[in-house]
Image (cartoon, rainbow, N blue to C red; front, side, top):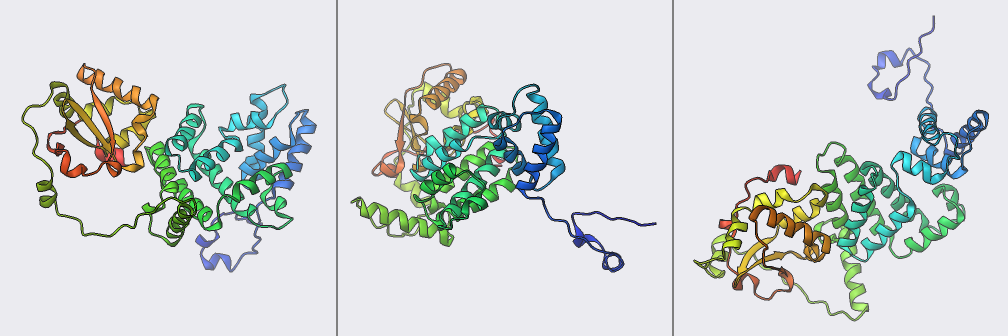
Length: 375
């Protein structure tokens, strides 16, 4: 009698068992081998399929022929009687065409926060899988990193057509290896984080913002990118002001600097302060980035208007027409009135702390589970 033990975790087998076994290590199958096998089976079953579609299925199977055949069966069943195209496979598997990743990468390089978040929003509204989106964008960044090489055989390594490789090289030339490796690291960490997270979309938006804000990190790659950004600004003639590090004032000192809270406030502003948590909870979860930015905004008052002061990370959040309508609708739903308000950016507002009173003690966050939002 012969016993065959199959496992993917050889390290967990006791040495007393391993020492009595013949060991055979099986490797993952190549994309070419899997594509050829699927082509052979497709022809036998009378299934018309594009080579590009089969190659994408093979890539998604990650070296497992069994998984590749399961995906092929799933896709062909969905489009039974029709040719299985690349676009059909993307739709069935909830994946995204590479042009979307190219658009996202372009917006990230241009530091277009709203545009980059909108690309993610539009993708999810089409019913695409977020985990697949994060994984495929990481793969796209990997291809850009490899495309920086001048090796003529790079097309075989990246596994794309000559036309696509040319496009990748043009995209990659706009960045550098250190920046791309930092991008890959951030999205690789995101891929493992969102697996068990409830607010997957919020984590993804934060990761995208982090790509555009190297100052949020202190590793060598981030510092290099910050220096590169400064050099670019200097070369373009933009004046860069040196920032002198000062000690942070304590809470008591900060409190003394701000003017006193006025005794009389407009009724609608009072209502917003006392129901701020309910207002945020009334905003749909499809606008989690808006909710997160409003949670971190500084609320104050000038004359009869509510002032919403953002950090520069969220400076354009309420300048977006869709976000503005959603926010105003949430206020009217909770307060029952149309609110007069103004949006400020703290960084561009001279003497913000000394000009505007601190109303944080009047703001009621009841109805918002802070721990859940941060998670």
